[in-house]
Image (cartoon, rainbow, N blue to C red; front, top):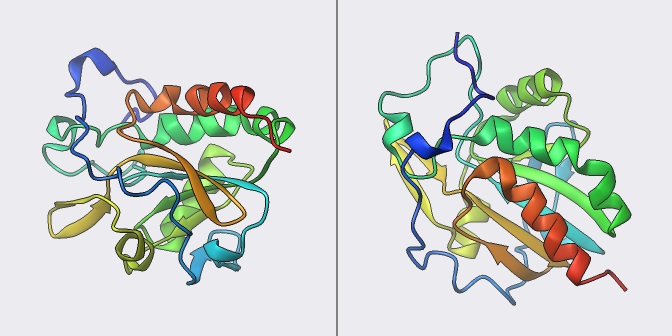
Length: 189
């Protein structure tokens, strides 16, 4: 069994800013549909108000081993603590004017549905399993065992336009705190 929530961040390599997200602020979210863990489909370009999209490589499961060498990949570990932190800050994010909150990974919706249920997430996860969202925005990705995975980053968009990017994100369990702090300085109007 893997303990996916207890992580000693000091023992993991920190991701460095490789410039992979510098171009994103000011971009319009693409017109395409992503499958949602709630059974629907979401077109990011049609999202109104302030939206937070946190992108992560993959959620682990307690009964399935992580890929070999996962902890040696800078920024790979921490998807479960990050998701739980957004869960724990969900009401606060809403009170700060966030209309929608989504997690995004390249995992399929069946895998994501299991994570939503197990972690008691009050928001859906979106599947970019064809990398259409990542390709349209030129998002940074990496490969593990033949799988293309998203590098961890968080987008804040307003009416479909990216207004802020958190990249790299480390430690992942502090990302929701960083988003809350940023939103407090920039109230929704």
